[in-house]
Structures are given as C-alpha cells and as structure tokens.
Length: 433
Image (cartoon, rainbow, N blue to C red):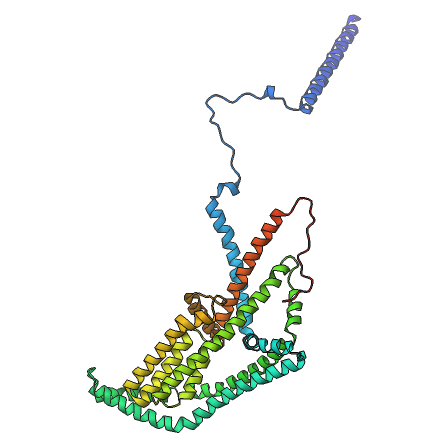
C-alpha cells in the first residue's frame, strides 16, 4: 500500500514533462510557420512550368489593337458630329432672327458699295460725319428713285399691258390651233376651265396670302429701316466696330483674324462693285434690245434685270425668262425668239468676258459652289438668302485661304527662329482692320 502513492507521483511527473515538451514543440512549429509566412516568396519554391504548357502572349493595348484607319475615321467622325451640331444650332439661331441677320448682311453689302465714296471724300478734307451723311443720302436717294421709277412705270403701263396680254393670249391660242401640235379648241377650253376652277378652289388661300402680304410689307419696312441704320453706323464707325470685334477673339488667334478681316472686306467690296457694273451693263444692253423689238415696259424690265443680276446664274435666268414671256404674250412668237437671242447673247458676253475682266481673281468661286450656295440660301432665307449666299461663300473662301497661308508663314518663322530667342507677342498694336 505504501508503494502506490510513489508510483502515482512518478506517473504524474512523467505526464507533466510530456505535456511541457508537447507545448514546446507546438510553439516551435508555430514560430516556424509565422517565419515562413513573413518571408517573401522565393522563386526556388515555385515549380517550373511543364514542357507541354503553351506560351500565352501578353494582350496588347486596346488602342493599339484598333486599326489605324478606323482610329482616324473615329477621330474625324466625332469632330464632324460636333461641327454639325454647332452648325445646326447656329442655323436655328439665324432662323429665329432671320430679319435682323438679313438686314445686317444687306447693310454690309451696301456699305461695301458706298465705302469708297466716303474714303474719297475724307481724302479731300471732308470730315467723317459729313462725308458719311452725304454718301448715305446720295446712295439711299438713288435706290429710292430706282424703286419709285419701276413702280411708276408698271402703274402707267399696266392697263395697256393687260390689253396686250389678252391680245397675245388670243394670238397664242390661234397659233396653237394652227400649229403642228394638233391642239384642239376643246383642249384649250378644258385648260382654261381647270385654271378657273383652281383659282376658285384656292380663294381662301389667296385671301390668306393677301393678309400675310400685309405682314410681309411690315417686315420688309422693318428690315429696310434696320439696314439703313446699320449702313449709317458701319460707314461712320466701321473701323472702331472692327477693333472692338477683334477684342472678342482669343489672343492666340487674333493676329490671323486681324489680317483676314481686311482681305475679306476687299473681296466683298470687289464683289459688290463688280456685280453692280455687270448688272448695269446687262440691264442697258438687254433693255435696248427689247426696246428696239417694241416689247412693252422695256425700261421696267431692264430695271428688273439689273436687280435680279445680284442673284448669280439664277437671277439671269429668271429675268431673261420674264422678258421672253412678256414679249411672247404681247408681240408674238417671233419677237419672243428674238428677245431670247438678245438675252442669251448678253449673258454669254457677261459670263465669258465681263465677269472675268471686272471681277478678276478677287472673287473666284466655282460655278458648282455658286449654284449650291444660291440653292441653300434660297431654301434658308428666300430671295434675301439667295442674294447674300455667293458673297458669303466668296468671303469664306478668302478667309480660309488667308488663314492657311498665315499658318504656314507662322510655322516657317518659328522654325527659323534662333535658339534662346524669346517669343514675341503677335498681337497687333492698333487692331486695325
């Protein structure tokens, strides 16, 4: 019985010793595990890839994966979309204030026509105010007299013209009955009946058009007054207006714009002066031709030819057709054919001799650009848009050419500038147009 407690003590001591050793080994294992986790992984422990594993190339940059042509098309595409959106917004704004825009553009054309007179008076010692007043008064009086003369001639000859038109219609009817076209009297009566029915069916529309004509007259008078005021201020203070406009341009682009302005103004002046001279020659020679052919209202028709000449290509066709129609219904087929010969001869002389000689290289626009510009201007703003479309295209062409040449000259100057030279400011001192 005495040996039992000693044996139990030794057993307990052995168990205690074994527990301590287990704890020490466990702590050592945990320390090794912590050390292995804290050490950076080495390449020695990474097994090499097997021989049968394929080489996977690295993926390229997505921008480099797109073909060069597609990237260029995308870059140009979004820029074109931005420009198209800007142009659409600009056209909407112009449509909203169409009367103001057309009045100002017409004032620019009149100013381009009258400005040389102001300059000559200033050179002879006339102050700026009296020179502007005399020039504007003379110009507006001449334009008013032309309008009054046309109206007076039409009102004086309207009764005789209506009778001649009725006689001409009867002669045309007889000619159609005896012509080789085999037109019968029944067919002519049906055409006249259809015309009368069309007029009767559209009486309401004609009445509303007459009421709208009052609004058109009011808008026309408003536009004329705006054009007169704009012309006066442009003649008197055009240089300072240009200098103020230059201040709105960014400083980096100001030198180019400052040089493009006078070039554009020279182009506009040459266009207006040349168009007036060509239109006057057309009106004189075509008017003399139809006068000697005994076509009624030869002088008002000549004035209409002069006014329509400001619409390139289209105006000449319309005014010539008007003269031929009046000759046909008043004097017969032979006189109409001779009138057509006179109109075509004068227009051929104008297109091949007068315009190249008078306008020269100052205003050089391709005929296709002229036709498209007149069509677009007429669709956007009617007759006024057709009148201002071609000078706008000519001025835009001049400005684009000048800015392109200016950018090339600037690049050449920067390339030959010596190292260490300080960049000089390109801004003009006086901002003179």
